Image 1 (cartoon, rainbow, N blue to C red):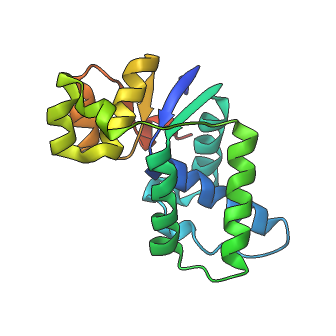
Image 2 (image 1 turned 90 degrees about the vertical axis):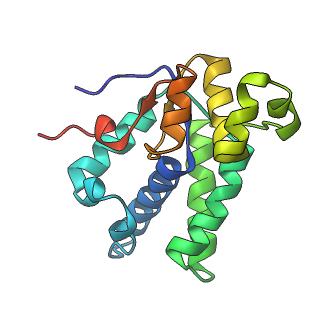
Image 3 (image 1 turned 180 degrees about the horizontal axis):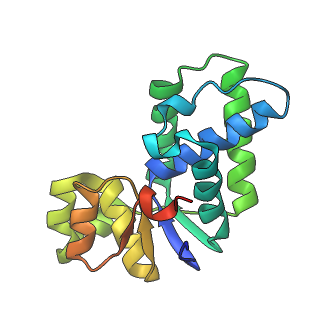
Length: 174
């Protein structure tokens, strides 16, 4: 059974996957075949897992992220989807609609604010401002951090007692 999180900080990887799945769902309503599910993690290659993943994210009452993550989405959409107008506009439109529906709380985490905290100074040089900002946000809101980055972000989050939730933890297999 999936755990329910009242509040969570969401990293760019899972957020991007959710936006891609939402876009594919919107396309399927018009009879269009899926185009991008192959770019998702292997765990998300079946419809049941996709529904469980989206259901897990939908169930989070308060979804938080940073402006840096929102900016990263542009690079992910360009690099991984390679869409041209009008498909690019459709992807962005459906993405904005989903984020509005979720009421995602996008926070600005300033580099100089992070650098002024001794506990985050070393983190900044190790993993950068985006990931350090996510950890800071999770610490400040005492909530989990949903990410795919088990190697660097999760390691630094763990040092700061932030629980990371990964894809396989959001998807249960029947």
